[in-house]
Structures are given as structure tokens and as C-alpha cells.
Length: 339
Image 1 (cartoon, rainbow, N blue to C red):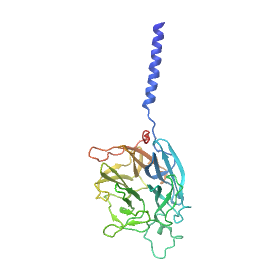
Image 2 (cartoon, rainbow, N blue to C red):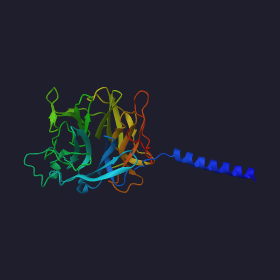
Image 3 (tube, helix red, strand yellow):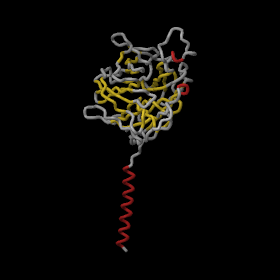
Image 4 (cartoon, helix red, strand yellow):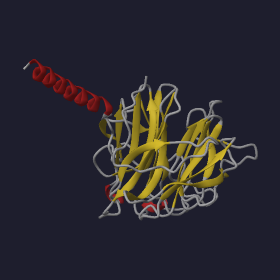
């Protein structure tokens, strides 16, 4: 009897141990998409001890009139901050607000965005009430905290003119180690680079007097993004067509934020999990070499042009600094709170 009793206790202990080990080995995962709803063009950034994502509300242009934001302490649990900015605050924006990009400066939070899907350079005598596609461009809003509410900073677009053939859309602001705020933007296959002035009301000219230099790498279509790792500047962009499965992400590497930028290769594209993967950003966990790709993709099957979801997956680097192809997952990433 004693032998059977001890054997029973051993089995019970083994079962409890197995359950404990299984529980400890199962990390919390974000899942993909990381939050519900149709959202695209996600801009990821860290403010303080929180991860933030600012996406486009993916809908028809006449319905795409506001922005939501999402914050997380650990990349797994996301809190929605609804309607942080809309066309009620941006009087000149009448349709198609998209591609938000946020940055903090001097205790204020600035949200850059595209609006009105401007199609041609402004012409003398245009009437924005009847011809909205000939007025618009890149705007800027400001708030006291990253969750808004944001208000119009200038009362007009920051940039509404065409330079070097670039449609004024898809902006990204990169703060370099010397404090310079570089302004990357451009659609229609052209990427421009400028420098914001100290109060973000305009641009400082380059030494040749030009406001913008074209830096378009091979294959570029839209959606530029830059980050700095180990002294190397990485420029990423989207190629293909945003409305279909050809959308993908490529990148270049340079010793300078101004280039030159030679295309290295494609690192995110369609596979058996999803199609139309693109318009990405990158989040680095502060004080670490842990990096994440934030991007949108189209579920399979896809039933609508605007059915895009926001996802996150790990970025890994080779020894020479090049980026390994991003593996899209349904699981997402493990919890990783900021220390």
C-alpha cells in the first residue's frame, strides 16, 4: 500500500511539474493583427515607457476623416485612443486623411499627416470648395500628450507644392543624433528630403538654396521610413501598388541620413499568410538591440481594397548589418515591456 501511495504522489508531482513548465514556457503573444479594425500605414514610435502606433483608418476616401492611436506597455495589450484628430480640427482637410507620423519635441507632440490626395500642382484661381484634389498635401497637428486631442498647428498645409515630381504625401520625420529633423516624403515614385526648421513651421534650405533634394532609390514608390542602428542609416520604402498584392517593402543602407541610398533588397512581401504587405515603420526597444517591424497587410481571402490590418513581427539582422527577410506570422511577438 505504501509503495502504491508513493507512486501516486510521484505521478501527481510530475503532472504538476509538467503543467508549471508548460505555463512558464508559453509566453504572452501579441497576435496579428495587434488590434481590431481596418487600419493601415502604421507609424510605430516609443514615448517614455510606452509603445505607440499611429495608423491610417482604412476606408473609402470620403470616410477616411479621422485618426485613432494605440498604446501599449508591452507590445501585447493595446489601448485604443479614439479620434485623436479629425477634419473638424483640420478645416482644410476635406477627404482622405492618412499616413500619420508622430514625434516629440520640447514637450509637445507633433502629428504629421497627408490629406486630400492632392493630384496636381496648385493652379492660379483654384477653388478648394469645388476642386479638393487640387488643394491639400502634408499637414501638421500638435498636442500636449501622445494621445491627443491634437489641433491644427498651422491652419494650412505644411507642404502643398510639388517638388521633383513628388506628390506631397507619406511624410516621415527623422531626428538625427545632432538634433537635425530630416523630413522624408513623396509619392508617384519620387522621394524628397528636406530639413524642418526649429519650430516646425517650414523648411531650412540646403546649401544650394533648394528646399528639397531628391533621393529616390531604385524601385521606390512611396512610404519612406528611416532608423539608425550601429552607425548605419536604414531607409525603407514601399514598392508595387498599395491596392493589390504587389505591395512590398525594400530598403537601403548608408553612412549618412542624406544618402546615397542604394537598394539592398526586398524584406517584406506577400506569402501564404497575407498579401499586400507594406507601408511599414520600425520600433526599437530603448537601450537594446531588439527591433520590430510594424506594417499593414491584407488578409487572405481579401474582400475589399481597404481591408488592411496592422501587424508586428521581429526584425533580425545579419552580421554585416543587412536585414533578414521578415517572416509574417499570426502569432506576432512576445511581451517586451520597456525597462
